[in-house]
Length: 575
Ligand code: ARE
Ligand code: CA
Image (cartoon, rainbow, N blue to C red):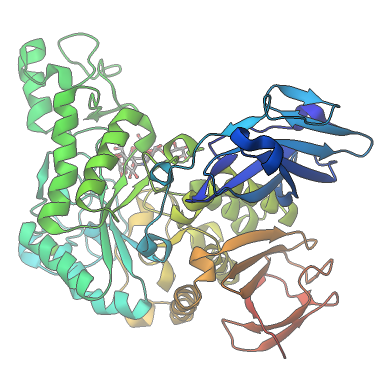
């Protein structure tokens, strides 16, 4: 047995609170392990409470098998160890190490000392059930030509890094019928505060709406109109850096170390310079985006006040946090406290493209933009670089990375204003694009549609992925729009997809998983390959209904899934 492959540590994603009386425990082993038992009890009453339970396989990746179980712990505390069955050996795993001697007593075991629900990451219902629509305001719809910037680029010509199209908040208000018909129930707007660029990530004034987008009253009107339709609105918090033209940075440029804002930034020496490299910290090497010193209490207060201001003033429903992983954890802990104090169900979602476990422990974010999943879908569906087995491994990794509630609070996306469009990655292959969208809608985490994906918009790297939204019906892809409407309806009518558990299956060269919720069971199958594939194994035999087409389907070991096709099925009791 590969003893070195065995890993467990209390808390994090290996032991976490499910509810006030239940914890989930997970352990990693090598692939050869046949069985794992957990031995657990209350350390204050060990002899009469000690019990044992078989653990279940949660998933596998290329190296490891992950096991889990849920433990009911009425005393709100649990102490535990593991019994691991290898092919030729049985060992017991304790906090102090591995032994071939059976566990006796609790002294050397792992401990989950108390179930404090206040420490747990709980995701609000609306977030779990959300279907987001991401809007880049300059490019979505121009509802007020009187606020247009000068030198507009014509709506249907290709974007450059500096072109303006005239889109604004009134334009979004005008298109709410379209969004309601599509079925989305949440909107994420990239930045809308005063800033010189078209993307507005170089903020000048966090307390005013950029005049090309509208003003406070337009934002209030938009949020109210959305709320009346059951649509939530979140904004982009660009707190890692400020814009070159902000009064604070301008003051430092002018007064150097005599500026009262000198400590708002991290500056190596004065005077400031930008060549050959900036002598102050910034976002990447972008001199026009000086990084804010969020450990300075004045800066922190300035930013936290902004976070509260827009919730109080315009009643927004949460924040997407730009470059969230480059700001200190203490800042985000206070951010969460302040935001949740005024809106307990506000959504806080970080932009983190790497492993985000440390931010998803309950004290900082509700979720992250799940770019790891995006990458797996690109490799598997769009580019065919990995097969079903490898995709399943990647998926299990993404699922195992985080505790369960964080999985449900993540924002899943196929693309965004920072990446090429998914359809373009598929080289225009609609079958593959539809398949990827289907997979995203059937996985845990709120799906987020980047404006225009639903009507077949294409676009390469930034800025090409930021073209003007196509409103001419003749140029919209009606087949895709219909597909998206159906996917959204399936997701919203069947809570298993937004709230339920998931089990990833191994059915040969297919991606497959089960979802279930309150006695209802669902099966998702996908085959992006160029060949028809036969189901391998009998883990899902039975009768189902195809939720996208309405047909009845019988799944058995002879079932063939066509090339570049996917299915979302609901299990039927009888045929
Ligand atoms: C401009 C150019 C880009 C160029 C960039 C860097 O357009 O082509 O790559 O400069 O010099 C905003 C604008 C961008 C602008 C940028 C700088 O929207 O158009 O880019 O400002 O002026 C990394 C970060 C991630 C960040 C992306 C852009 O980890 O946080 O880069 N995303 C946010 C926003 C952006 C925004 C900013 C941050 C800055 O969502 O829109 O940019 O406020 C790989 C890497 C990632 C990298 C990613 C880029 O996956 O692994 O680390 O993300 O590519 O997509
Ligand atoms: Ca306008």
